[in-house]
Image (cartoon, rainbow, N blue to C red):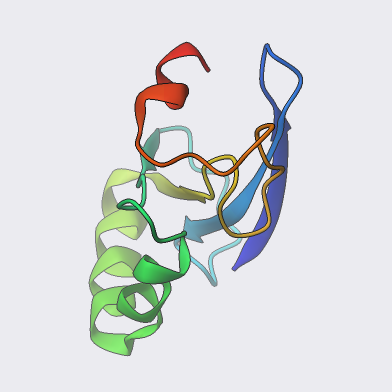
Length: 100
């Protein structure tokens, strides 16, 4: 699992985790399919990590991607959660994210 950091239009930095499948292939795959998993409120991206660490789930994604193409799964921490920067205060609902 790799880490990533992006900067929003409003200047906030959002960090998260990136998983790329197939994990052990050195093939140059042309097809790429991206998925973004947004965590539930008030959690962070860690709510998904256990699921991706289970070998059975990882094996399935590796098999699919070796046939169909590269799969990239982004697990961002929304602002104020996980390792991402805070808004001016910790949000009490999801409305502040509408303007990201």
